[in-house]
Length: 172
Image (tube, rainbow, N blue to C red; front, side):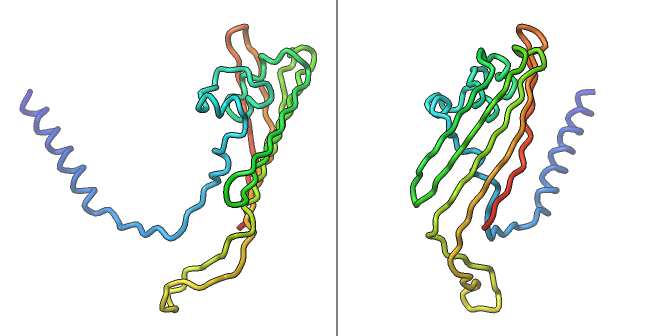
């Protein structure tokens, strides 16, 4: 019985190593991925290293844990942030939440984010026919934006649910 288990473990190890031998070599040419969505604009969240998933940040909770909006005491909350970063990058966020009938119907929220990366970008495109392997495409003015809607509902005094759906766009 122990011998069968040992043989199975050896077989799995050999199979795992042999599969990795056939892995393809990835050549990374460029990278994107909506990284602006991971920039923290809320001062409280930034000062706590983004460890705020259980805190009541009112409408800003939409960016971290939408369910926390149910702990709002007021009916309407608005939050806005404007950050100037290095290399002429500006990052703006806006959030608003509305709690009708003292939360009887839940809390609805709206978010907006935008990033302007400045004018100091020169574009290139991969072109194997050119000796350098790329060619210039000229000046770029990249920007990105996100619009979202969220909803949260307290199911009991100790349990809430929430969701945040966003439409994201990057323009290079």
